[in-house]
Image 1 (cartoon, rainbow, N blue to C red):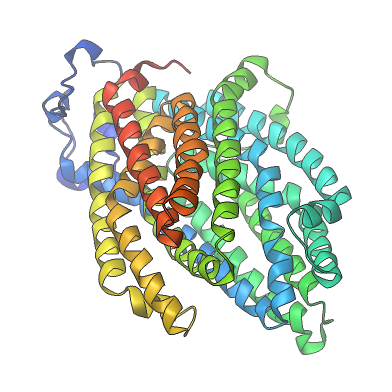
Image 2: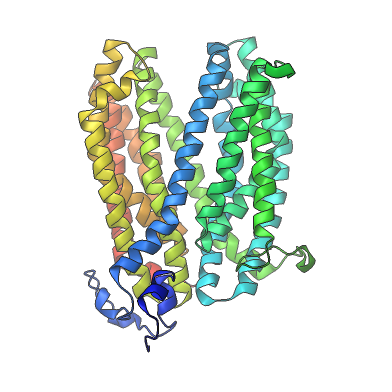
Length: 487
C-alpha cells in the first residue's frame, strides 16, 4: 500500500486505517508471535499501543469510578445499621442472575459491531444495534416482571435471617426492577459503542450517572434538604435515578448522525432473523459462561462461609480488594475485544494478533505493579476495612496470594476479551465450566475439609483456578483457531 500520510496525519488515525483489508494470507502466520514483519510499514508499534490505550483508559476510569460509587453507596447505607447492608447485599446475586440473558447478548452485539466496523459496513453495524436493543427490551422487561413479583422469595432464598432484612431487601429489589429496562438498554448501547472503539462516550455518561447516584443517596437515604427519609428504599431509588440519567445521555449519544454507529427509529425494529441468529450464536455460549460462573462462585462462597464469621469477613475483604484489581484486565479486555473484532472484519488476522499481544503486554505490566502493591502493602490496605489485628494479619497473608496471581489474571481477562472479539465465546464457556464450576469449589472443599488448611486453603483453590484458566485461555489463543471463525 502506498503511504501518503505525513506523521501528524498518522498520529490521529487508528493503525487499522493504514492497512488494506483482505491482503493477508492465513497460511503465512508465524505462530511463534513474529507477526510484525507482515504488517504494513506504515504501522508502528507506537501506533498500535496508542489505539490500545485510547480504548482502554476510558473503560478503566469508568470501571474504577463505578466500583468506587458502589463502595460509597454501601458506606452510606451502612450508617443505617448492619441490617441495611445485609438487605442490599442479598439482592446482588438475584439481580446479576436476571442480567445474565441480555448481558450475554451484549457480548454478541459487541463482536458483530466490531466486525462490521472493520468491514466498513455501517448499515450492518446499525442493524445489529437495533436488533440487540430489541432483544434487550424483551429480555429485560420479562426479567423485571419476574424480579418484581418474586422479590421477597428471592431475598428469602438468599438467606434473609430476620423480618427487617427481608422487608428492606424486598423493597430495594423491587425498586431496582422498576428501573431494570432502562439499565439494560443503556448497557446494550455501551456494548455496541465499545464495538466501534468508542469507550469514551460510555465513560462520560456513566460518570455523570455515578455523581447523580451519590447526590440522591445523600438526599433520599437520610432525608436532607426537605427530601423524604426513605433509607434503603432511597438508596435503591437513587441508583435508578442515576441509571435514568445515563440512559437519556446514552440515547442522545447514539442518535447523533455524524458518527459510524447511529440509532434511527425510522429504520424500525422489525426482527431480522439472520442478525438475531448471529447474536444468539455468540451470546448463548457467553450466557452459559455467566451462569456457570455464578453457580461456581455461589458454591465457593458457601464453602468458605462454613469456616465461620471471622474467616468469611477476611475472605470478603480480600475478594473486594481483588475485585478492584479486575478493572485493569477488564479495561484492556474491552480494548482487545474491539480491536480484534475490527481487525478480523478487515480480514487482517495479523493485526488482530499484533493488537492482542501488545494489549496483553501492557495489561500484564500494570498487573505486576498492582501485585507488588498488594504484596508489600497488604496490611495497610486491609486496615482500611477493619482495625482488628487478626483480620489485618490474615488478610495481608491472603493478599500475597492475590499478588502472585495478578499477571496471570490480567492475561486471562485480556486474551478472553480477544477471543470474544473474534466470536469465540464457546471456548471461554468451556474453560469457565472446568475452572470455576469444578476446579475452584472442588479444590476449596478438599483443602478445607480434608487437608484442614482453613481460609488459606480456599485461596489456594482460587489461585489454582486462575492459573489453570490463564493457561487454557492462552492455549486456545495460541492455537489461532479464533482467526477463522465466521460470524
